Image (cartoon, rainbow, N blue to C red; front, side, top):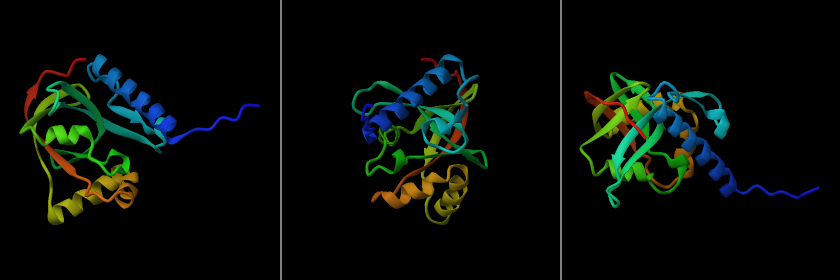
Amino acid sequence: MTNERVTMRDVERRQLGVIDEHTRAYLESGGREGHIFDSTSVGGHSFLTTMLLETVGRKSGQRRITALNYGDIGGEVVIVASKGGADIHPAWFLNLREMDEVTIQIATEAFRARWREPEGDERERVWAFIDDVFPPYANYRKITERRIPLIMLRPVARTDILRP
């Protein structure tokens, strides 16, 4: 009998592999696949709606595409820069902060979008909403020292779907 020890790094690698495959399928299918994500494959508890976010690397200048869970409030798309409760911001958020507009794709539709961060009472209302979309976010806020950013994206114009 072998004594196999699974480390957090092993779990993270597996999760990243699943997410990378999901993103690839989303892109290659033009959004026909990938909009709905079975999060149980990475330790979640349900199916989630996902979108693609295209940014430009602030250091590299390279195009970056990230698949993210999202919710919709009054025509604005809500995403969370949680990075699973890590104490550092995700790279996509750092890139987004350097841009006025980004491209997003939801299923088979893509848009240029302007972004903002809700503050005060609005921030609390958005957290209440997004916690219902993905309950682990509440725990992520407890395990990190940083203030997890909420991002509101307002589509401003249709554009071509994202391609690999």
